[in-house]
Amino acid sequence: MSHETNALAQIQRQIMWNRLIAVVEEQAQIMIRTAFSTTVREAGDLSAGIFDRHGRMMAQAVTGTPGHVNSMAESVGHFLRKFPLETMRPGDHYITNDPWLGTGHLHDLTVVTPAFHNGEAVGVFANTAHVIDIGGLGMGPEGRSVFEEGMYIPIVKCFDQGEPNETFFDFMRAGSRLPVELEGDIYSLCACNDAGARRLIEMMDEFEMDSLDPLAEFIFDLSGRATLAEIARLPRGVYGGEIWSDGYEEPVKLQAEMTILDDAIEVNFAGTSGLSSRGINVPPAYCRAYASFGIKCVVAPEIPNNWASLAPFRMKIPEGCILNAPRPYPVSVRHVIGHLLPDLMMGCLHQAVPDRVTAEGASSLWNPPLRGGSSVSGQSRGNKPVIGDFEIITFNSGGTGARPTADGLDATAFPSGVRTMPVEATENVAPLIIWRKELKPDSGGAGRTRGGVGQIMEFATKGDLEFAVNASFDRIGHAPKGREGGLDGGRGVVTMKSGKVLRTKGYQVIPDGERLILELPGGAGMGDPTTRDPDAVERDVRDGLVSADNAKALYKVVVNDPAATTKLRA
Image (cartoon, rainbow, N blue to C red; front, side):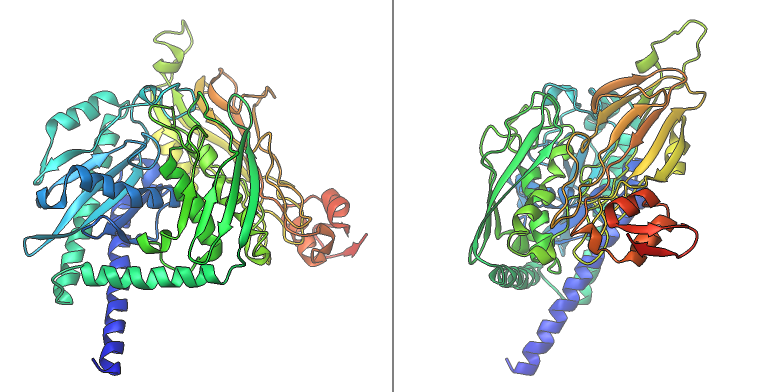
C-alpha cells in the first residue's frame, strides 16, 4: 500500500470514528428526550456507548457521568457471559440493576441491545440511567443490606425479538412507587439503543463496512498508544495520599498509593477504612470507574474514553475495605464515597505534576430524595391536611476546586458532571416549593485562584406541610482541602428554618411549618491568597462571592465600595 493510500485510509477511519461518537451521542440525546424520570431528562444522569463483539467499549457519548460510563464499560462483559452474542436476536433487549454487575446501586438500570447488519450481530449498544424509584427503602443510606434497598434485577431479557416480557414488567410496576415513570424509563432505554443501532447500520452501509472489528482495532490501537505516551511523560515514582469523608457511623478514610510505571499507573487502596453497616459502601467497579476518571483527567484528558485508554489504569482494592463492598452489603448512596476518589487521585498526582491538578472540591452530589404523603404522615392526621404522595430526587452541587490558572466553578458538579436540575422542573412534578436557590458568599476557599462557591437552597411543600428527606450529604465535618497554600473550601450545613441542625445522613421528617435548608460546600483554593490579583478580588466582592471583610482578612485587599472600583493592598 502506497503512503498516499495508507494516509487516505487513516483519514477515512478517523472520520468513521468521529461518526461513531456522533451515533452514541444521538443515542444519549434520544434517551434524554424520551425519559420519564427528571434524573435523566433534566440532570443527564446517564451513559451511552457502543461495544464490539467482545464487549469492549469502542465509544461513549459526550453526555453522561464517568461513574456510569466507566462502570458500564465492565458491565457489557457480564451480559455477554450470560447471553453470548450468537444467541441474541434482533429486537432483544437485556437489563440489570445488579450493583456488582452494573454501576454500583439498584437505582441505575443498564440495558444492552445487539446491533445486526446483514443478519449478523456486529456489536452491542449499552446505556445506563438513574431512575427515581426502584422500591424498597428508597435511595438513602439507611439500609443494612442491598435487599432492603429496592428491587434486585438480575441480567434478564426485558424484550424478546421486539415483544415486551410482560412478566418482567408486571414485577417492575408492582414493586415501584412510580410504576408509570419506571416502565417509561425502561422503554426509553431500549428505544435509544434501537435508534443507535439504526444509525450504526446506516453508517456501515454508507462506508461499505461488513464488520466493526477493523474500526475497533484502529480505535484501540491509537487510544492505547496515545495513553501510554502520556504516561511516559510522567515522572516515575510512588505517590501517596488520603482524603476523609464524614461517613455514617464514623469518619471514613480513603487512602491510596499510586505507582507510575513505564506502561501503567497502579493504585493500591490499602489503609482505607473498613466496610460500613449502612449504604455508603462502594462496589469495586464503581471504585475503578471514578479512580480511573480522576487519573485520566490529569494524565490523558484529550484521549477518547474507551476500553484501550482505560486499560493502563489498574486498581488493587483490598477485601474488607469500604471501596470493595461484597454482596449483599448496602450500597445505595455509594456516590458519597465514590465521588471523593478523583480528588484522592489528584492528591497523589499533585506530587508528580502539580501544574495539572485542581484543589479539592465539594465532590459528592447533594441530591436529597424527598418524600411526602401517606408514607410519611400516615393515612390520617386528625384535622391536619396530608399532601399527596410524592417521591422526587433533586440534583444539586457545591463548588469545584480552584485550578492552577483559573478559579473553580460555582455550584457545578464534579466529578459526576450531571446538570443541576431546574427549580421549575422539580416543582412541576412534586408539591414542593424551593424558596431559595442562591450562591453562598465566602464558601469558596481563598487562594491565588479561588475555589468555586457553593449554594444555599430552601425546600418546603406547598402549605408548609411535613415531608421527609433521606439525607446523604458530605463535606460537612471534613471540608475540601486547599493546595499550595490555598485555603479550605467552606463546609456544608444542613438545618431547618428554625435553626435545628439535622443529621447529615439518614431519614428525617421536616415537620409542619418547617423548611429544609441546605448550605452546600465550596471548593478549596489554590496558592497563597495574598498573591491573588486585586482586580479579581474586587470583582468577587462586587459580584457578591466574597465579602469585603474576607477580602481584607484573607486577601489583604481593601474594597472601600463594592459598587465602585477603589481597592488597595492592605
